[in-house]
Image (cartoon, rainbow, N blue to C red; front, side, top):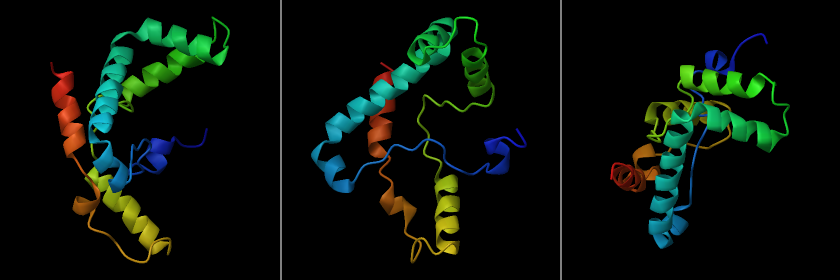
Length: 130
């Protein structure tokens, strides 16, 4: 490997959960439940290393002594690549938007505050705290 992706493109958003406004409006409770489950699942996986690695080995048909699942898990923890809080990295979204604008992929920049609905995430995190 010449360079890790996180070093080459530190502002790149690697995981993004999105929906159209229409679907989010019509199925808001489903979205909140999904985000709640996602957050709880990530918390569980991060706090149960051995179980997570075992499941990865089974799901990928890896050999039991394959070091890669443990390496990937440990690297994800070390670099904080997994975030059960489901953060909304507005600075990174702005960076991506600027890249798309510079490349001519979008005609103009949009107001990210109007494009991102943070309420379902906030509601989900409230539920994970119970």
